[in-house]
Image (cartoon, rainbow, N blue to C red; front, side, top):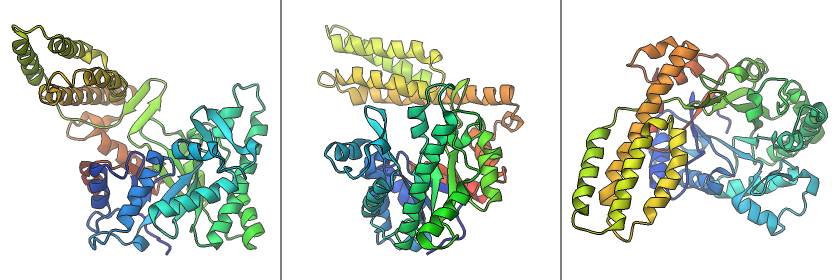
Length: 427
């Protein structure tokens, strides 16, 4: 059942859910034999379990053009108590877990890596994915313990880090037991803290993790042949630090390195979508939309039409102020909330959808041009001076060329993203 060769690009299932036809089509395409992708990475909390349910639908498909279960490297994670898990917690389903092991990070986000919680979550994951085993089970962001406990540099950082590591080792022992049962083939840690500097108060110390795994395996399975096999962490063109620390250490010690968030970058300057988007036909569609609404309003005392016209003009005036797709995603919530008020009075889909679509396309285009200029001018990424090279192409090539990465996980919510992944694998 062990898979030696993993595809350089894996399917990141963060926003992929059962019931979303675009997501389903993309996953079926990604796992077709002609695509050369054999890695799936999901989690119990992605789409509140619906991501794993989508995996289950594909794994049990009778489509002979898809990879078989034995040819797929399947990873999932556990740790979050949200959504359905929060309901289970409130209903007493996790009463066997000591209360001090429940990290209450916020009112709607608790976290836990206790062995009892791991066992519960693993059974639920296997059921949702309709498989007898996963190739690797990751502890998902155990640093929530530190984030909850450490509020300032005056706190006992070293003491809390030790307590977190002790909790991780308890989980290692439980996962060694799961290996014995054939439920998992290996385990690892997926942590945003792996990308932080060693002196950061939320850093996850990694240097003795392998020794701890050996101890766990000796206690549980009477052998030092432990199942600790991989780390996962964010890295990209702007977040490189972890590549020279955690990832380098992992590769030197025979662990696999999985990278997430390759195209969504965050630093002190803000949030950046590392992707190129084509120029949109914005001015033409904006003008035709305004013209149509003005014609429609002639001789009519319709507050709805005038309100929609005002909304279009307001959005147009705000366009230069929206610097990135992330800003638009926040603004979009209020726009669509406003639009919902008009649906009973006018055929909004016909009147507004072309404008909304082209507006978002223009935001993406302008944002990508700004990102390209930023990367060239502030980070000296000379390859991007070649307009024929997309930002995402340069970003993925950078990770491939780092020498310390096994798999780059990419969101493949649409078939076009699968096509891009297929192309980068070839080069």
